[in-house]
Image 1 (tube, protein in one colour):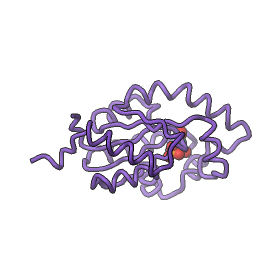
Image 2: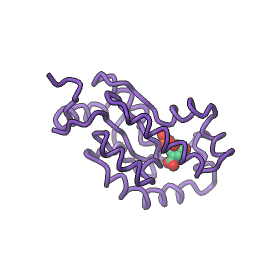
Image 3: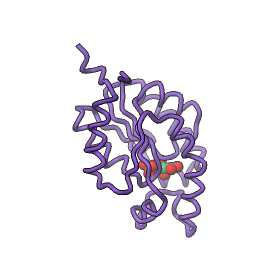
Length: 180
Ligand code: S3P
């Protein structure tokens, strides 16, 4: 049993981190925290506006600072942005402060789930498929490096994926807040 203070979801855009995260948080009595939303709240502008104003590097700096602050606390289900694992310090913090679940999704399902998305700056281009493939090649080993648990979300609805994860988390993660 892993007694990490938080449950942390990692994985690419379109894996269902927010949707599944909300459900899991409710199920385990954790506070749901969306790291991207925390960045928006702290900076005071949307993700597309942040990318436009300070570029991806500026966004990553906000992401690193906000994630470090969030992970000082416990008792949370933290849903991270797809690129959070790119930074080695983020990966170390994620590992130290959470039981980490990698939500996997194939590129075909990502393309379908994100076809009308306007909120992800890195996908506002014609060659989405190639971009997603390249991201998977670069990032999958990093997700693997931090993950305690992996689930393929492709065949499942968010409710089904949550149900699978509830069973596996209950078996592998010891919620320190429930310890006597
Ligand atoms: C990003 C993923 C997004 C958001 C930003 C960059 C990425 O979060 O952080 O657009 O680099 O994969 P989601 O994974 O929640 O969509």
